Length: 220
Image (tube, rainbow, N blue to C red):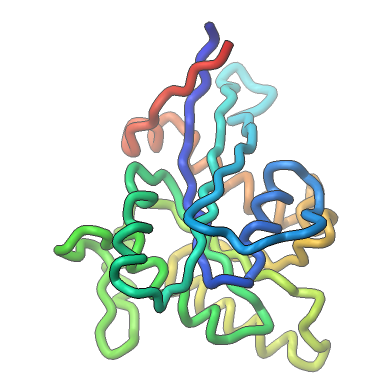
């Protein structure tokens, strides 16, 4: 029996932003032909080598939990989703670059996941704004991914990218903008691929591994 460490990453965002297509691209390195609505939660696995090619190299299973639903769901639905938010090692926040509302809703998605208990801890929103100091102290690594980059009109791109830069600052997270139907956006050696690896390395490093209490997954 060999043992691989398991990392749990939530993939959160509004319905229709492309979470399922993104997860499929990250895990299978292929475009998802016929994406469908996610009911409840769907889990796919990516194999990640930490410090590949060095004596410290170690292989991890990255479980990507694609959580379905709407941020405006009834309290009963939110309560059901809360079971997916336990023992989380990282969060990928996904928004549609052509849909400003989906970007704004990421604040509420992050709050729902990070403050799943009745007494909020960490992130606090007052008057619609983040308290950046408190959010900077959040120990769970975050990554911001914008989808449908190819659908932004050329004359609107600077405006959209400026908006995502502010989001990235609010969440204290790196940002990746891509088209989930084109694997070249995550091709090896690109800045997006480097950012993605850096995000996963935050969770698979020895120091973070101790802090986030990783679990082990055994296979034959």
